[in-house]
Amino acid sequence: MGQYLIYLDAAKDIAQEAGTLLREYFFKAGEIFFKGEVNLVTEADTAAQDLIFRRLSKSFPGHDFLAEEGLKELSGSEFRWVFDPLDGTTNFAHRFPVFSVSLGLEQRKKSVCGVVFNPMSGEMFWAERGEGAYLNGQKIAVSKIDDLNKSLVATGFPYDIRETQTNMIHHDHFLLRTQGVRRCGSAALDLCFVACGRFDGFWEMKLNPWDTAAGAVIVEEAGGRITDFQGRPVDIYHPEVLATNGLLHRAMLDVLNAK
Ligand code: IPD
Ligand code: CA
Ligand code: CA
Image 1 (cartoon, rainbow, N blue to C red):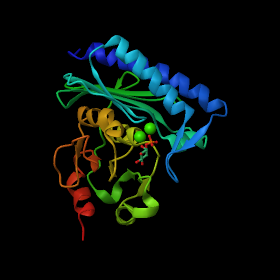
Image 2: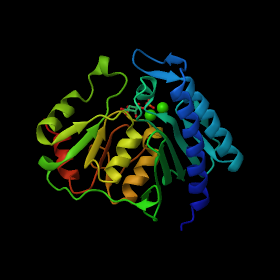
Image 3: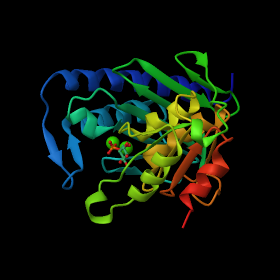
Image 4: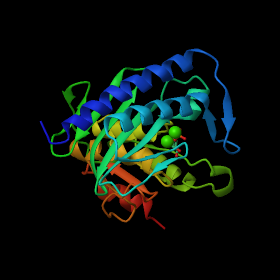
């Protein structure tokens, strides 16, 4: 049991509570707002964010907070919670039951624990730095696939895809070099699926810190590797993310950097 256990336990309880709230919204018609042509925000995103912020700031007054729906309380604390109250809003709004609550904690800019919970499947992933990664209490590890031809990989697309067409070329390259490319619609879950070996790799080009904060530590604690497209150590404030089982990292970097 590690030094961050009190934070991890609190994050698990709060993710569970927020997940229960999201399930309630999922089963009743909620209001959908549009942030952009394809970027949605539902009542549920803001309600879950309010709940998480209320609970975390009560348990840990003085900590900093950064979350997707406009929450930025940065006073210079060494601890910063970086969270996405609902990762997978488009799925949620279309009643596709793949989305998550993602809660990450940084200490002096270093991710120290993460929790990702899918309230529809009941799967909770978590990790604490130095203590391994878990799915519902069972230790998890990345896959052992070392040949891209035998791999299943995943990606996601940014909301400005219609203007930028970002990532379509990488998508096509991987489609021709792997056994398949999946697009789940929740980057936090994609990272956890790498951590537990369902996916052998995942890349995305325009992620935000709240998408990666929890999943990055979960991947690393499961024995995986997570970097940018140059192979530099993960920085959740940098938009490019490549997470793999480690064995495929070089091969995936090569595809991403192919001319
Ligand atoms: C999105 C999801 C999606 C990814 C997008 C994210 P949101 O987050 O993680 O899988 O492809 O880039 O913005 O908006 O549903 O919280
Ligand atoms: Ca997100
Ligand atoms: Ca979100």
